[in-house]
Length: 78
Image (cartoon, rainbow, N blue to C red; front, side, top):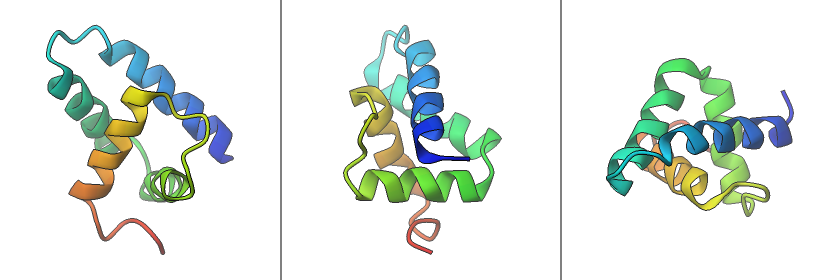
Protein backbone atom coordinates (compact mmCIF):
# COMPACT_ATOMS: atom_id res chain seq x y z
CA UNK A 1 0.00 0.00 0.00
CA UNK A 2 1.48 3.35 -0.96
CA UNK A 3 2.07 6.06 1.59
CA UNK A 4 -0.29 8.51 -0.11
CA UNK A 5 -3.13 6.03 0.41
CA UNK A 6 -2.09 5.49 4.05
CA UNK A 7 -2.03 9.26 4.59
CA UNK A 8 -5.53 9.60 3.16
CA UNK A 9 -6.74 6.75 5.37
CA UNK A 10 -5.34 8.46 8.51
CA UNK A 11 -6.91 11.75 7.41
CA UNK A 12 -10.28 10.00 6.95
CA UNK A 13 -10.03 8.49 10.44
CA UNK A 14 -9.11 11.93 11.78
CA UNK A 15 -12.23 13.45 10.17
CA UNK A 16 -14.33 11.02 12.20
CA UNK A 17 -12.52 11.80 15.46
CA UNK A 18 -12.58 15.57 14.83
CA UNK A 19 -16.09 15.55 16.31
CA UNK A 20 -14.65 14.46 19.68
CA UNK A 21 -15.19 17.42 22.04
CA UNK A 22 -11.88 16.83 23.83
CA UNK A 23 -8.94 17.28 21.43
CA UNK A 24 -6.62 14.92 23.33
CA UNK A 25 -9.26 12.18 23.31
CA UNK A 26 -9.61 12.57 19.55
CA UNK A 27 -5.86 12.25 19.01
CA UNK A 28 -5.72 9.19 21.27
CA UNK A 29 -8.73 7.69 19.53
CA UNK A 30 -6.99 7.89 16.17
CA UNK A 31 -3.77 6.39 17.54
CA UNK A 32 -5.76 3.62 19.26
CA UNK A 33 -7.53 2.87 15.98
CA UNK A 34 -4.21 2.56 14.17
CA UNK A 35 -2.89 0.19 16.84
CA UNK A 36 -6.01 -1.98 16.82
CA UNK A 37 -6.75 -2.17 13.12
CA UNK A 38 -3.59 -1.44 11.15
CA UNK A 39 -0.96 -4.03 10.40
CA UNK A 40 2.45 -3.24 11.97
CA UNK A 41 3.95 -2.68 8.51
CA UNK A 42 1.28 -0.02 7.80
CA UNK A 43 2.01 1.69 11.12
CA UNK A 44 5.74 1.59 10.39
CA UNK A 45 5.24 3.16 6.96
CA UNK A 46 3.08 6.02 8.27
CA UNK A 47 5.51 6.70 11.13
CA UNK A 48 8.42 6.72 8.68
CA UNK A 49 6.42 9.00 6.39
CA UNK A 50 5.90 11.45 9.26
CA UNK A 51 9.62 11.32 9.98
CA UNK A 52 10.26 12.28 6.36
CA UNK A 53 8.01 15.33 6.62
CA UNK A 54 4.53 13.82 6.60
CA UNK A 55 3.35 15.38 3.35
CA UNK A 56 -0.43 15.15 3.01
CA UNK A 57 -1.16 14.51 6.69
CA UNK A 58 -3.69 16.93 8.15
CA UNK A 59 -2.92 18.44 11.59
CA UNK A 60 -5.06 16.06 13.67
CA UNK A 61 -3.77 13.04 11.76
CA UNK A 62 -0.20 14.26 12.17
CA UNK A 63 -0.65 14.57 15.95
CA UNK A 64 -2.05 11.05 16.12
CA UNK A 65 0.85 9.58 14.17
CA UNK A 66 3.25 11.45 16.47
CA UNK A 67 1.47 9.89 19.44
CA UNK A 68 1.57 6.49 17.78
CA UNK A 69 5.33 6.83 17.27
CA UNK A 70 5.79 7.80 20.93
CA UNK A 71 3.66 4.90 22.15
CA UNK A 72 5.40 2.35 19.91
CA UNK A 73 8.99 3.56 19.55
CA UNK A 74 10.20 0.13 18.43
CA UNK A 75 7.98 0.16 15.33
CA UNK A 76 9.55 3.06 13.46
CA UNK A 77 12.67 2.90 11.32
CA UNK A 78 13.04 -0.70 10.52
